[in-house]
Length: 361
Ligand code: MRU
Image (cartoon, rainbow, N blue to C red; front, side):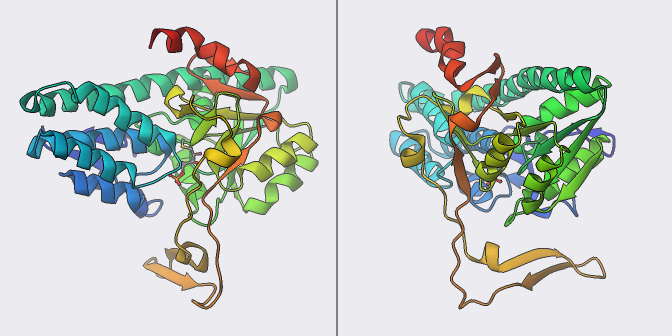
């Protein structure tokens, strides 16, 4: 996608021994990049949310393995890098998926062959992410186009968190659908949930502004009210882990939007690249590890002061007890459809949509 007319991806190779990422901790006020030269750099970037978003976390971790093996191609180095990266963030399954794919390719190789093979494979995972998101966005855009055909009015999409191009290598997931509908001339307006406490909605608003998509930032609590008043045509969110039966784990607050959508007859879609599907899960509510993040994310807000300088404000003092679960699970019964690179499936049809590929794997 473009920033000030220049095409960017969230992660690119920067020579043969480093990658360059868009540093998301600087957005939406500053756009800047950061060079990662080691597995430690990559682990820190994921943990500190310089890179974030399930698909991008997976791709970045794959490069982390490659960078580790450039220093040492041995079994212990591979195992250590795998363990260190896996421990960075627990919820998005793309991380486990990418690391498992790297390890199963690399483990059988001789130590001296691993670095080059790992670099190539990380590049393949990155390119696949772009192709998957382009394809699923096309299917999601079909839903927006169909809504427009019914109403002949701008389609009002509500989204939560950031499922845009910076949460992936390119295009995004939920926003890939929005961008492709917009680019095809379908009038669309996006209600952007602020998404406290990390305010990923500000990243979404920044992306949409850069692409010229009409949007309005709203407080997280506003969505139900807008749905009751008939001001939302569909909800489209991303996902961090989806079960084979279509339970959707996504940024905290998604479940409340799904409840409000169900109560108001608003279709609720999750845009899900296949590496976000956890085929091993039996019980999403019990088995998905929900990341508990730092209390200070809730106690404080960061932004700009009146002079445009970075500033933090304390909302609650250190004595205030805080809980900060970062994700929740929306049960399949509240999900109208899962938008994938293979098409849109009801939760019950999801496994069938991928059955041939899984049988071949
Ligand atoms: O905690 P984050 O910012 O890494 O959150 C992950 C997400 O970006 C969202 O939950 C998103 O909707 C799914 S990733 C496209």
